Amino acid sequence: MNREVIVSSGKIARDLSDAEVKEIEHELTLYPDKKAVGLEALKIVQRHNGWVSDESMLAVSKYLDIALSELEGVATFFNLIYRRPVGKNVILFCDSVSCWIMGCEKIRKEINSHLGIDYGETTEDGEYTLIPVPCLGDCDKAPVMLVGEKMHRNLTVDSIKSLSSSRETQNKSGE
Amino acid sequence: MTGSNERPLTKNIDLTRGALDVVGYERAGGYLGARKIATGMDSSSMLGMVKDSGLKGRGGAGFPTGLKWSFVPQGPDSEAQKYLVVNADEMEPGTFKDRMLMEGDPHLLIEGMIIAAFAIQASKAFIFLRGEYFESERCLSKAIVEAREKGYLGENIFGSDFSFDIVMHTSAGRYICGEETALLNALEGKRANPRAKPPFPQVSGLWGKPTIVNNVETICNLPGIMANGIDWYQSIGSGGDFGTKLFGLSGRVKNPGCWELPLGVTIREVIEEYGGGMQDGYSLKAFLPGGGSTDFLTPEHLDTELTYDAIGKLGSRLATGTMILLDDKTCPVGMIGNLMKFFSHESCGFCTPCRDGLPWVDSIFEEFERGGGTHKDLAILHDHVDYMGPGKTFCALAPGATAPLGSGLKLFEDEFEAHIKNRACPYKH
Image (cartoon, rainbow over all chains, first blue to last red; front, side, top):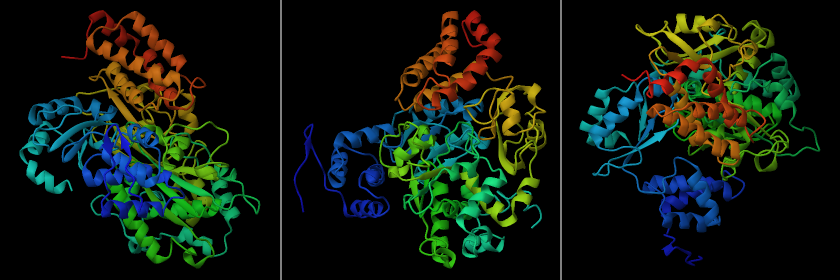
């Protein structure tokens, strides 16, 4: 096996885990070339590690033989690839038009005061990161947000209070 | 079975239980349309039937589906590999219809995909699903496995000589992927910048192969057409459009939601009968008829029929059919500003009017919000309706943004003026 080390800005490609390799290999069977799997591989790596570090980026670039600059270009293009560490649960907060009409700004302030975070920030205990997201497609139940993989609908000031008071249960259901 | 013929898209959807599995779906008459490929119907008759049905694309543009398919080169000299791609990247602001279909009745989409794939002779399809739709992904993945186990996907489906399979692709979040050539670039693992047309995807699409990209709701129309025939399909709808459409309401309406109704129903009927009218204390000021990229309409248009032509004649578009209602207590300038922020963020950055124009427009709206808007700013906004309009940009994203911007500048001139005069938003308490 080729163990050559790729160095970029002093960073070195890490070894992909067996589970990561297995999932990437499965994706490779679905597409006609390696390049098409680049974004999928980044998502896989992110699912296992929470975010895509430089070391992970280098590892995917090396594994799929995609130029680092090209992969980085794809990674930074898409909203859901995180190039910085995020909390255990990412809150994708819908601030698009229907949620805005239904008062999502108030909810955002409530998150701010109860969890102490605004857009792009992570709670001190590393539980939550707040990120705005374009329309989540649940507009009849606005305002809404996605916490981990779970939709929270018809948000009120109280739903944010209960989210912040039940952090531990939230962690379990967010899987 | 009551009502199933009037609601072909949602007859199996019951929000109080999960989606039907393959057995339940078949018991409800499912896969009858797709089975026609095993009972002697050839691909060109299937394509002809969809063409004759008059089905128009439900993703926004309203292009005739059968006509689009007919551009795929067929015959012995054509590319052997053809692709079908389902655009499930639902991200238009205020649009929540495809989610309901995918989570409510996933086998309907799969059956529709089999029909579309056979008609264009594609052996492989991708569902391009937005990454945030985790529940849709779970529902569809489960249904795909069930269909494969039954032999409805895979080699020689339904015992015919046609082989076809589906790959679920989840995206990583960018509105521009809804543009079909940008979507193809994303599927190929590239940045999702739109491509130059021609060549059109029907001739040279995914990895250079002939490719059809259709919206989820469009595809979900196919099983009904195949099973019940063209006469039945054309008996639904009025005003020159056939079949049903999902119509949605969001905003300060009593009963927001999404309903399958015949094309040609009036706007008033949707808002008053299905939506129950506006919430107490709120009245309807204006609305976007089909998502964030459509021109504002006003209460004087309530008796217009919801058809592609009728809404087009008013200078707007039916587009996704999901209406966003603006009430009298919400600031129209703020609402347009919210949309501009969205479009600005989602610009792919490829062409100048969009990349530079939208952030400029966005920053002016922020200034209006802070109370610093001037008449000069207002003139710049007016200029951008032209600078970013149709024909000035590489794709339809920025022209889409000019729809609420241009119509809003005209309609809400007084509100813009009030922001300038008061040096503040008059709607803020």
